Image (cartoon, rainbow, N blue to C red):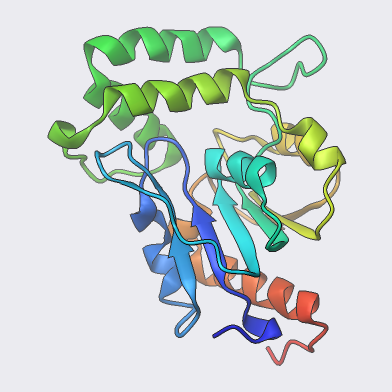
Length: 222
């Protein structure tokens, strides 16, 4: 559907995951036109179609990518468990220490499956991965983006409405990191961790539905 109250969604997932991140949330957005990028960490890169008008939905690293890459057709952004910068810097002390990402990069070359599995467990995902499909080069590029990426200028220059969704129990993107990135903009999910599209798909879907209806100037019947 392409009416204003149901603008298509273009979804970008986070590091160490794939487009299946969005499957539970899709179930709560039945009939919605949804396009999902796949970064190729598990060997299949998919660049989703960008409709003429759409809302970008990004999770974790995908949120930063959505913020940086919003095209001319982007009418709004929903950033879930996201950040404008992930790693610490002199003017961003709240970020994750660069040595953590450097250590992951070093270990990745020797045992990518262990690095990805350990990170996913920290995020709250207990399901096993298919180690044979991992693409070390793409994973390393993603880690380098986490280490060096900085979308604070893009956040400051944003030209479309943004909805920030965050978990107050996120062990990866802590509330302090969320606040350092976005100030007081976030809508908080009580008890939510780092995988809100997987653990709280109905909540994420309801937030997206309300946000898109607001963009269209339509009342939310829910």
